[in-house]
Image 1: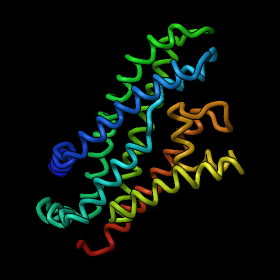
Image 2: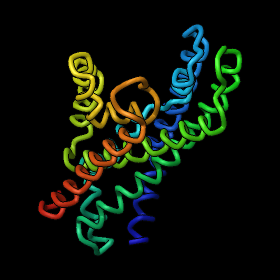
Image 3: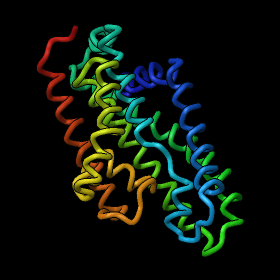
Image 4: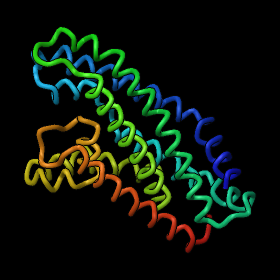
Length: 239
């Protein structure tokens, strides 16, 4: 299993896509810190200040989906199983674990950029300052959201098998369906993986879910989809 994980990690971190997602995550962190801490005017509440440290979990969901689905598009899934001499489910499990680890690394980079840039900018805002505990809790929530989102994306990629279709569906759901649902039924929107990830990363606050509850919701979605992907992978022929 270690050999499989090592191989999947090498594939994940040696593609040009990982650099693009790393730059994208850092760029969002910079933009978000500037918009929330500077352009938003006066912010004097802790949840509002925590939002300046939030990341963009959907970016990691895209990362996992594109990478895992690309294995089938480029027909590298079958050779990985044959060379590794393991079952299809084991190979996919190793791939998902590899995306969890890369998601953690990308999340750590994004969080570091957010903290370094946002905290000095927030120093000029009135109201209570963010404590070390507040910052640590936001960073931890972001890292959990990033890792779970990367795993969820990889599992969805294995189920959909088409990077283009997966990206289109994901973007439509995240930027059209979920906002519409949120306007009509906020509690229901928060129970989607997209809504829960937003609460967990502090992009959404003062809503129907606590941060801890959002973590459990996102974890449940991730576990369910990952298990389904492994079961399906074991049953179908590799292309």
